[in-house]
Structures are given as C-alpha cells and as structure tokens.
Length: 139
Image 1 (tube, rainbow, N blue to C red):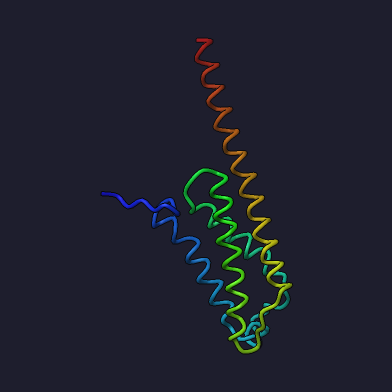
Image 2 (spheres, rainbow, N blue to C red):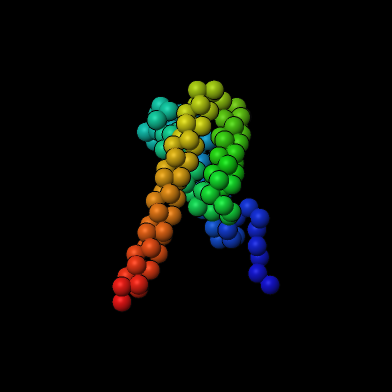
C-alpha cells in the first residue's frame, strides 16, 4: 500500500519546504547582533527567501494548478506571520509589519514565477503533443 497525502505529492516532496522552513526558522532564531556579525543586515533577504520558500512549496503541493497556488500562498503567508511573531522572543529581534509585508511580496513573486513556469510547461506539453500528431499524420 502506498502513502498518498491530500496535501503533498509525496512525503519526499514535503521535505523540501519543511527543510527550507526549518532553515528560515533557525535564521529567525539567531540574535540580532549575531546576524550583523554574519553580514545579514537589512530587509533585503526577506523577498528572495520567501520567493524561494514559495517555489519549494509549490513544487511539493499536490493537486490542480489553482489549488496548488492557493494552498501554497496560504501556507507561506501563515509561515511568514508565525515567523514574525516568533522573533518577538529572540533577543535583538522584533516582529515588524513592514518585514511581514516584504515576506508576503516575496510569496507573491514566488507564486507569479511558479504560475508562469507552470503555464510554460503546459504549453510545451500541448505543443509537443500537437507536433507529434501532425508529424504522424504526414507519414
């Protein structure tokens, strides 16, 4: 009997966003002074990190394209909210609405990239199928 998740394509697929979230949670747990020593200053990391999380989650979520986009968006925005709240308990870090806004913008960018890639993939699949049939008809 094989395992079938209603949310993820497989347990192995689920690992990608879970590990990514774990890394982000770890980075959010680092005290503010340590981040400065590592060279992580400013909010410019939020957008690419959340776009990446969104793409990893979109890859892992099962279902039709629209369902995948909606579930991925909800999961990533929920994670962004809990991540900002979590920073309330980390020395030298504070939850900030502007950080959350940038996180949500990163999710939107990830969803847009994912939707565009999905459309491209579907068009290529349709185009390949049409060309194969056309060539077959000529022979």
